[in-house]
Image (tube, rainbow, N blue to C red; front, top):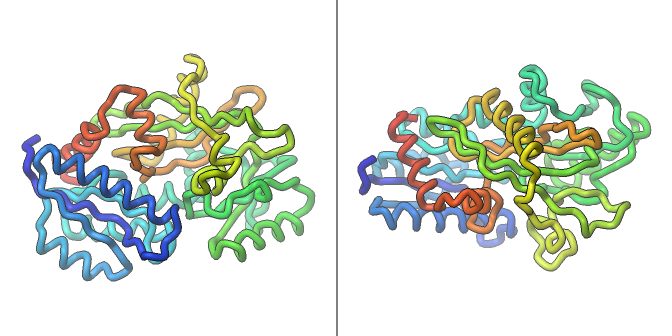
Length: 328
């Protein structure tokens, strides 16, 4: 691919009062822009807001050959992250990552779970007030946001014992009031947790698999990667949820195969992360498919690239070049 093209790096605009989780996208912008500038591309960054007309005018003026999409949310909600993608498609601009329709499906955890179940990919049973339990009723459940990421609102109290419909509904409603986002309950899988990074270009490549090390947790402490584990330096959870790449080969093949199957169900492309848990029988369950995962240099995807001896800048360039070649 010819170097020296115009690339627009589009991200969600970040307010001065933004939280650490919201500001993380700026680290991604810097890393991606530096990687592309170093190979000779003309790079310009754009902060997207709900004023898509303004973004459209700015992109028309710049006339990029490709958009590097780093939009994680819009208007305070991850549910709207697909709107800029739809704009890129209307404008006929190739952009990195998964297309708008697939991104919308993968980002809605309930819709994603239905799609995975229909495609034969195991996922934990789940509960909503409207539909009740979809699958076996568990002893414990975890209350999660339907369309938000970054472990929003997730803490030890999110893992609850399943007693009756009333208490389950109350837990979901309390989480919704606390965060301002819709939630559901999912069967809590007690076992090991893995993050599977995937590079989906002409072919689908599963990168070295990371396991979250919960060995420092007390026996009665829920083994989850909650909000503090990701965004509160100095907290117990932040300091004691390291990732390790020492996964047994047979297990890595099993977990990687599940992640690949999930990616194919959604037709994902670009950089993807799939979160998987094993139960006590080592049966794998796909928890979530993140079709637009974090690309910060200290995040899991960059760590998996390093483990595979793939330079970050090489991957950034490959994502852009694939989008230009495929015209999407």
